[in-house]
Amino acid sequence: MIATRIALTALTCFASAAAPAAPPAKAPPVEAYVGKYPFDKVDGVSFLDHPAVRAAVTRGVSDPEARAWLLGAKGSPFPQIRRENGELIVIGCQQHACDRRNCAIYFNPASNLARVCYSATGAQSRRYDGKGGSRVRAGSCPS
Picture 1 (cartoon, one colour):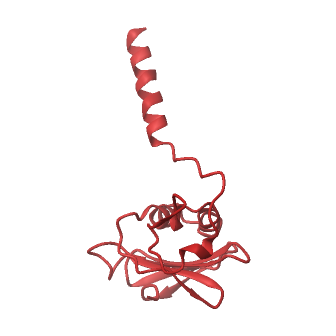
Picture 2 (cartoon, rainbow, N blue to C red):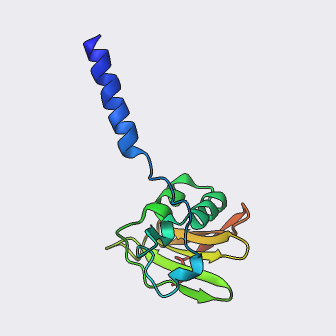
């Protein structure tokens, strides 16, 4: 009985510690991130934690490993977010392994779609179109 109670308490603590933080009641407009780094917070929310960005990447990237890396790459090198052709562009790579693991996210605030490029090898990359389709290409993601 005591062992069961300890195990349940441990599981409850682990589950609550591992649960993601709830998104804020009102997230800032994604355009506010232009010129900032993906980890900079606007009104307490970083770009990669923005509900619209997370939803678009989750919908558009079918590979759970790629999706987890893209949305959880908190210590990776990323330049500032820029706007080009109506999309907010975020590029980045794995620290000390940029030649192998890298990515590019093209988020369109008008459609709430994210086109994504993800490479785990550097030899090839998978390009997600934001609508459920993808294709493999030679080489890493554009930077």
